[in-house]
Image 1 (cartoon, rainbow, N blue to C red):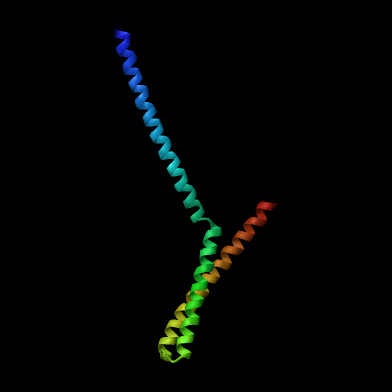
Image 2: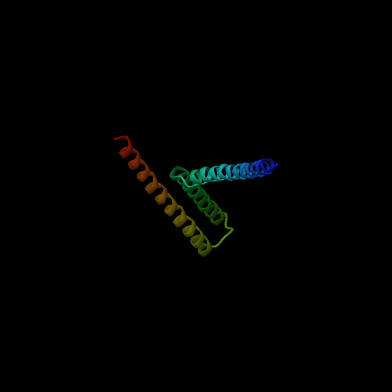
Length: 113
């Protein structure tokens, strides 16, 4: 009898530990997936692509502003303010993208050696 009670309590403890182990394993797996997504999101290549897209959007805004001005929809001062802000943003994004590209190329050359 005394062994049966001890065996029952040990079985319950093992069951509890197994449940905890599975729960921790599931948590570990979900955190691994999250870590992989974040690693991809913050990879230099992905950031470079986002900078290219953002620069392209700024260029489109410049073109749209110029078209509105040429169509007579906005005055000169509004055109200059809007166009210059969009052009400045586009230029900054392109410069950042070029610097990142250069750093990535340099890093790639060094890793091949």
